[in-house]
Image (tube, rainbow, N blue to C red; front, side, top):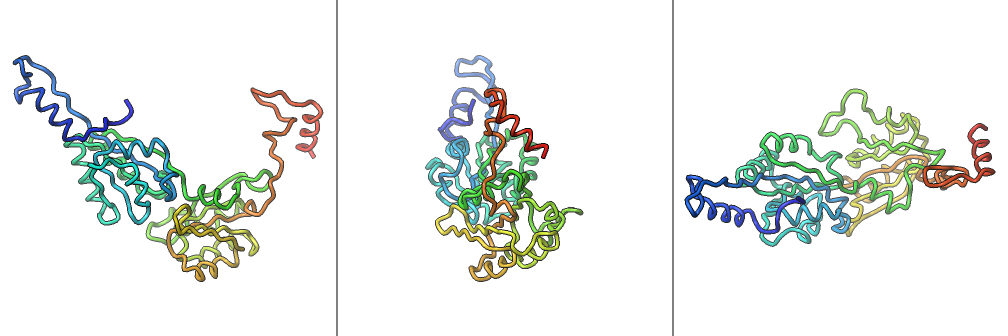
Length: 304
């Protein structure tokens, strides 16, 4: 079955109480099993902000929920109000602590409620989801994660850039500058990641953009490395700026970008689209045979 029915938890509880007596006997005096609804928590990736960038599955889970928990500071109100039931309980998590959220999960387990926990972007990145997921499992709740569009993918789309250009960059490093509120593990230093010279998406670092640029240069990126500065991508006040690495700090100060900003960095951001082998006539796969002459040409290029 795909989630809860559209009626509220209270109606389901009333229906159960009417069909069975406290001694387990039904209206006719015969013993019958009382169905107990298991609570559920779904972690929904809301995407970068725009209400229409949430997935269809995510929208369904919000519409099914008795309780919707969301951070108003990170998720636009429309992501919730356009999909939640009129009788759903809406909780702004930016106003409460983790312990308060766990209290809601405990209530969901006790009352058989369906909860949609709405996170910005994709829940797998910097969302404090794992600690919540583990707690929900321990409480005996059914748990589900619905992925969402990450801000780095939305920023690349707005900028009209592919992050993996053949023969230029074939990897994307997702990271942040060390020294913030959450310690970085040993070995995870921005300058060390920069030594790969590939595309990087750097989160949670706008307040220290000068230090970020210094670390990237120390890792080998030259001053003229292209950078895309993406602020509140897909929100009504979104801002997308292009600059060089040695201009990043000045750009952030000029536009007062301290929060809700990520950086895309690397040579792929300025490279022309080189020919992909995937659609080359000399390439073959299960559904297509190669052109023989093009195949010989492609092999010659690979060995040269």
